[in-house]
Image (tube, rainbow, N blue to C red; front, side, top):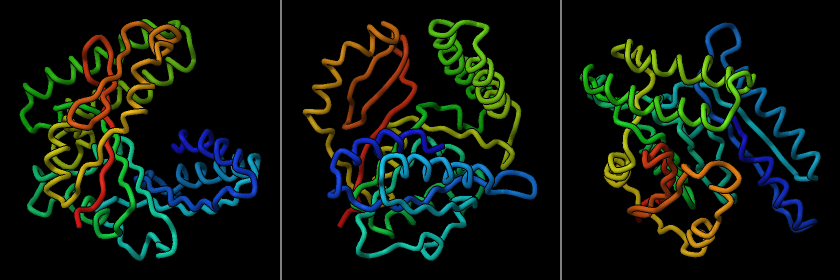
Length: 260
């Protein structure tokens, strides 16, 4: 967790004394056992070390709760701060309307709207195996996870410890959970970016456009193919930045603000 922030700290450090103070609230799902927040706490310690290295004034608080139970009071928002919500792939693990009338997924979106961030950055795992129908879910899991395993087969040696860790501790458990579990036990419930688009608008958000200069830089950034692999691609649709492999969309990213 928090892998994107060290490079952000490094860029801020180039501002010298003009660099702003940073406060991050890390929110994760509770771990089993006596220390439900151990992963969140470890993330905070690592980020504090990076901030110190780059001379950034930094504060951190960690929250380990099911997201639908989080309140505004838990977030300790300062009205004088510039507030940004950065959510990368976490909402796929929040239950949806198939479980009950009080939809936890929409409840989280309503909370984000209520705190009125300047921008809501939403990154998603693009998939439709959140469906309650087993056959459709099974086929989609096979298709999507084949792409993930194919990426590592093409880009990492089979004996790589990192590859073994990712496949054994992330991909395989996720696939098993998506296929074999039902009800609240099934925690992998991704939606497509088009489904998230409609859901986010219903929750009261307005989509922000993709910056044309950023998109142009990405389109011209041939190193994505040259340095990584020719089968990776990045494109744009409906103001969503889409990332994938061999024509299959795996991830998507979009930015939003609460509708006035």
